[in-house]
Amino acid sequence: MSGELGLVTRPLGSVDREAVQDALAACGAFSPEEIGVALELFDAGLAGDYVLFGVERGGLLRGYVCLGKASLTAASWYLYWMCVHPAAQRLGVGQALQHRAEAYVRSRGGERIVLETSGRPDYGRTRRFYEKAGYLPVGRIPDFYRPGDDCLIYSKIVNRSEQDRPEASC
Amino acid sequence: MSGELGLVTRPLGSVDREAVQDALAACGAFSPEEIGVALELFDAGLAGDYVLFGVERGGLLRGYVCLGKASLTAASWYLYWMCVHPAAQRLGVGQALQHRAEAYVRSRGGERIVLETSGRPDYGRTRRFYEKAGYLPVGRIPDFYRPGDDCLIYSKIVNRSEQDRPEASC
Image 1 (cartoon, each protein chain N blue to C red):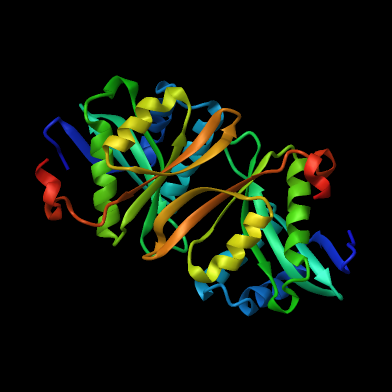
Image 2: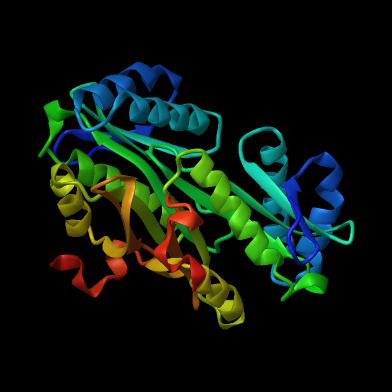
């Protein structure tokens, strides 16, 4: 799938592990422990437990997303991890990942995507990205990650295709 | 650990699997799919991924709880599952499980327990139990489980021992 911005979204394979690790380390938002958990999810995704999509630009992997069905729900999915390489910020990589993730969830009969992120000030840009993408805040667990670092929970309804949306042209 | 009500709390082992399955089926709150997931968690708990405690009364297992540390957090734990056999409701089994779970979390340096439950009307008694136990609502994901079945998220601070609490005598 090739977009107007020279971005190509595609499923990920084991060959992408090093580029994923590089992006996680380079983006500066994640601790070594967090990178370890992200790579565990990546490996579990390759094994079939989760769904992985990446975005390439100029032949380089510039971001990826990891998602999966929420067990015991009829049509809810979790977005577990998303990362955009700092060398490709503000180029639409995040939006391309979101569009691919949402299209996939819809194709599987999913109706919403839920995600958790940090309430820390340095996550402000991340939160604004999700809010602009249509995620609504549905919860806040004070001090969840550590003192002063709340867990913010967001949810987005995705079960109508872009074409069905009256506001699609906005 | 033996309480005043003839309740004994203890860790669970593989010998308890049948009694756990019986309690899950008998309590009537869980679908076959939910019982399957609960038993998967039980098995993973036996393998060391989670912590399991049960309550016995008169030599019979009458309830159990499954909890685990929340990854990437300093001191947050999830209460994944709790079930009290209908033949032992209103006898303090739920409270005994909560006390044991909280004492364990504190002993591991944990500061809070987070749990998710259903917003359905037939879960009203469950929600009141948690609210009475000191859990505060921190989120609601509309229609998460299925249409009309919200996910409610609760959190409780547990990092002060009962003895430390000024309100302990209340």
